[in-house]
Structure formats: C-alpha cells, structure tokens
Image 1 (cartoon, rainbow, N blue to C red):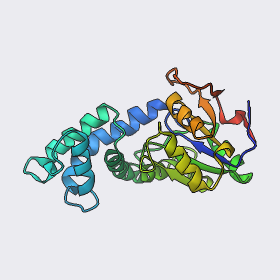
Image 2 (image 1 turned 30 degrees about the horizontal axis):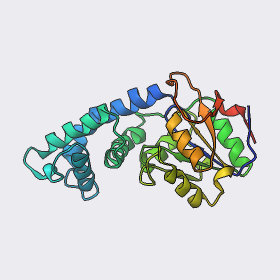
Image 3 (image 1 turned 90 degrees about the vertical axis):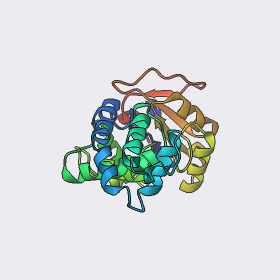
Image 4 (image 1 turned 45 degrees about the vertical axis):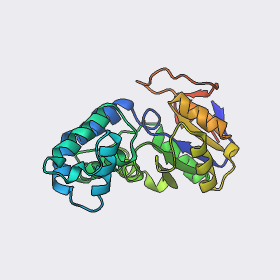
Length: 237
C-alpha cells in the first residue's frame, strides 16, 4: 500500500496501465502490417513528409531518401527496422499514431487496460487529483489509446499527456519540465512506471515514485528503491 497525499499522478502506459504484450503484439503488430501501405498513400502529405525524413535520419539514411523513386520502400524498411529495435524515435512514434488512428476508429483496435485502472482513474479524478500520462508513444497515440479502451473512453479522467517531445523518459530534466507544466511541486507528484531507469530519473527530479509490478513485466534494475505496486487500488490518497 502507498499512502499518497500529493496533488498529481503521472503514469506510464506499457507495463503500467496496460500489458506489455498488448502494446508489443497488437499495437506494434498493427503498425508493422500497415506501415508500407500508409507511407505509400501519404508520403506526399505535408504532415507526413517531415516524419519520413526524421525516420530516415534515425535509421542513418539521408533525410531526403523518401523523395527518390524507391523512397517509399526504403523508408518503410527503415521504419520497420526502428520498430524491430524498439527505438524511441519521435518521428516514428508520430507515424505509428497516425496508423493506429484508422485502426481505433474502425474498431479493429480496442485498447487494453488492467481492470484496476478505470476505477482508480475515476476515483482520483473525483478527488481532484491531476492525473496525466507520460509515454514514449506520441500524444496523439495516447489520446487514441485511452479514448478506445475496453472499458470505454477514459480521456475525461486525464488532464494531460506528455511524450518524447518533452524529453527522454530516462532524463531527470524531462520530469522537471513536466512538474513545471503541471504547476505542482515535484515532491507532490507520484510517477508510476515499470522501468527502473525512468523511476530513477523521476526521483532525481524530486518526484515520489512507485514500481508497477504487472504480469509479463521484466525484473527492473534501478539505483533507488521504489515502492512496488501490483494494482492502482494500492494507492491510498
């Protein structure tokens, strides 16, 4: 049990609110199956073109590669390579979010959240806590994810979202920036994640921290000790 008397809760997604297997097998699988057709159909879109350049750069290619005759195929292969390596590239995450949108809106994709998540979010929102998400997935993807869960639309229970445009999740400066944006002292924000290095970074920024112990999570390594948490019901506010 964690007794928390602060003002804000910041949540990771994969391995925290939702199962790692759903994110990797279902969401990433969907993106991999559709990335080629999506790039082929949208490579001239002004909102997509800079993302393709960013993906090419992240894969060590010339950022103008998408403009060549075989550019679509080369960028598709670059995107697949980055996904297979689980690279947290901002352009790739934004592209994935665009691909997932059609899947969520068609009903092909329905997000997984652990059973304890919806009642906890409702309880925290009712009590006035400022609850937000910090994930390597794009902000657009996060909103889609929580709008289309098996428990319904959870977005009204969340006050904000952060992604890698704020900064790397293993960098303490990212958490300092989030606390400033929330307008809450770091010590009054609880960050919950399954990744030890992320929790360490948050702790260095002054956050309270809790380690999510969900089915399928790997054993974490960390510098600091973080209170273990098997269910959000264990957080007493």
